[in-house]
Image (cartoon, rainbow, N blue to C red):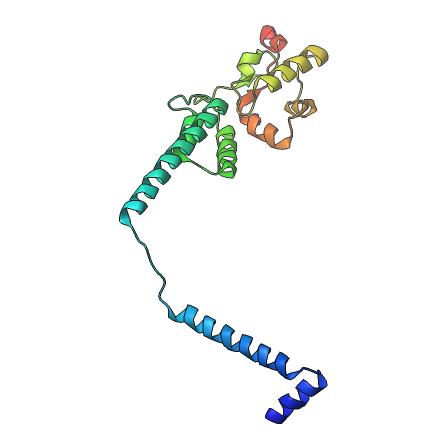
Length: 186
C-alpha cells in the first residue's frame, strides 16, 4: 500500500513539502472532528426564559386569532339562531361538506305541508316557496308566463334558463297545472 501511495504521489508530481502539508491538514481535521463529537454541548435551560417565551407566544396567538375573527366577521353576516349559516358555523365543516349539506337542504321541501302550487297563477313570492326556487327563478317563471301564456305541460319549465331535469324532478311533487278557465266551467 505504501508503495502504491508513493507511485501515486510521483505520478501527480506532489513534492515532499506538499505531502506533509496535506497529511498535517488531515490530522488536524480528524482531531477537530473528534473533539467536536466528544464534547458535551452546554445546555442553558432557564425555565424563566421558556415561561416568558410561552407567554409571548400565547399573546401573539390570541392577537392573531382576534384579527382573523375580525376579518371573518366582515365577510359573514351574524348567524341567526336556527339558520343554516349558524349551524354550519357551529359545526366548523369543510367547505365541500357545507355545499353537500346545502344540496340536501335544497332537496327538502321549503315548507312542511304538501300543498301544491299552481304555477299558472302563482305570484313570484308563492313560487319562491318551492324547493330550489329563489327570486331569480321565480321572476323567470313569471316572465315566461307573461311572454308565452300559461303552462300546458310541466315539462315546459325546462325552457326556463337554469331549470334542468334534476331541478324539475325536485319540483314535480310540489307543482300543479290548473287553468283558471277550467275552474270557471265547472
